[in-house]
Image: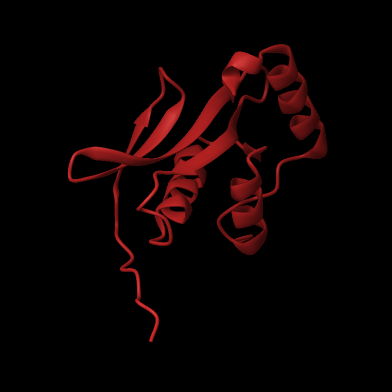
Length: 120
C-alpha cells in the first residue's frame, strides 16, 4: 500500500518588498510563489515561479500558495498573470477562483519580464 502524504494548511505570508508569497511550516519557509507587481494601468500581479522545498512536495503547499495569490489579487482588485507554468495549470483547473487575464495584459507582463529578467 502506498504511503499517503498528509495535506497541511501552511502559514502563508506576503513579502511584497521581495516579491515572494511564502508558505511556512513550523517557522520555516517551505514554499514560494515568486512574483512582481506589473507597472501600468491596470496593475497586475505576475506569478513567475512556484517552488516547494524538497521533502514538502505532494502536500498541497503549491496549490495553497497559488490559491492565496489569486485571493490576494482579488482583495486588491487586480488581475493575475500566471506566467509560472504551475500557476497557469492551477488556474485552468480552478476557473471559479482564477479569472483569466486579458491577452494584452499577458503580453505586457511578458514584455516587462523580458526587459527585467531580475524579476524572475
